Length: 153
Image (tube, rainbow, N blue to C red; front, side, top):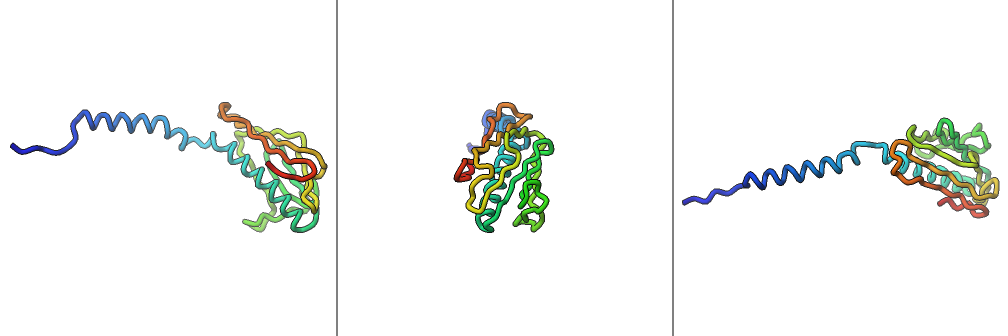
């Protein structure tokens, strides 16, 4: 007698059930962007603060970060109101970044500057808190600019 090779119906059903479970659990994490927007906003604001500090040190001048809480816009400039803009190294245009709509941004210091030594202006600790408004289970992310040193963490 000949022995047939292949999969049994039970094995095929088990594979289909496991694939379905993985798709039901993992797919929403990859399809929905809402959970990643707060992380992206955190990275964008952190990099803008660090770029402003490094530019101030490199050019030995004051560079300001202006965060508009209403429009969630970040701009870098040589004046506190961004009239004279710092250039974005990627686009060679004014450094302006817009954060996603589904995040809440809170800070007591919407405008912070860095002097030629990298120290913050005003010389005080500044904190920025980013919260996802669509996915409340996401933890709030906090960015701190240290007084005296201007260290961004």
